Every structure is written in C-alpha cells, then in structure tokens.
Image 1 (tube, rainbow, N blue to C red):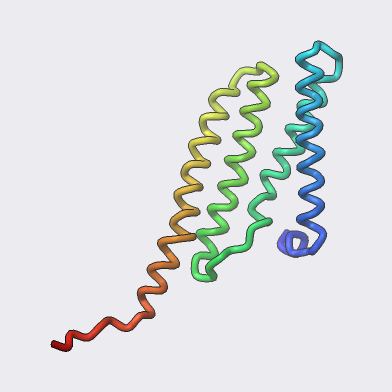
Image 2 (image 1 turned 120 degrees about the vertical axis):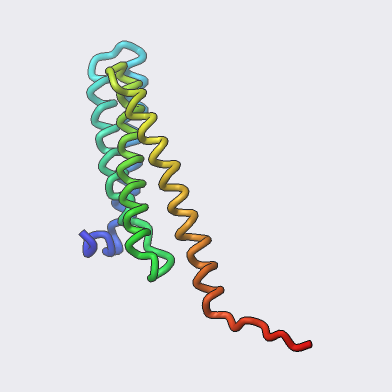
Length: 141
C-alpha cells in the first residue's frame, strides 16, 4: 500500500474520488428528501465512497518527525477509522436507520482522541527533542 500511496497520481485520484462521493451523497440526499426513487441507493453509494476515502486518509499525510513515526501512523490510522465511523453514523442518521447516533458519537469521540495524539506528536514531541540538544546555560556569577 505504501508504494501506491507514494505514487504521484494517488492524491489527485483520491481527491476526485472524494468529490464524486460527496456529489453522490448530496444528490442522493436531495432525491431522498423529494421522495424520488433511487435516492437512498445513491446516498448509500456516496457515503460508501467517502468511507473508503476516510480509511485511506492516513496514507496521504507524511510523518513530520522521524522519531514519532509509529505514533503518527497509529494516529492517522485511528483518524481514518474514526472518520469512517463518523461518516457511516451520519449516513445512518440521514437514512433513518438504527444505530446512527451511537456510531456518530463513537466517531466524534475518537476524532477528539486523535486530535490530542496529533497535537502531542506535532508540538510537544518536537519541543522536547529541541530541548534535549540545547546546551544548558552555565552559572557564571
């Protein structure tokens, strides 16, 4: 998967897939609200496409720090899974299926956890690394 994610065509392809998924979900939602046939199917297909994009999200962002690579991969993978759970929960709510609120709650809660891990890797870990390489000031008085 890393070879595919590092190819120059991967990001533009995922962007196009995400746009198609959003367009399908929006058109499907409008068709469902107007009572037209096929609206639920189009909404489900659009949300499914967005879930696939969310699962692959972790491959789109490179690690800013080589020392925190494993923690970064964990955070990005967890972000992809929680985004997928949030999107599925939203889809369940729009389609009025049971379990939508629970999936939405779990997805948002894990996104908050991912934000904390992301902030730790991005800010505090880099500050601690910079402080370790500095020479402490001498007490000359």
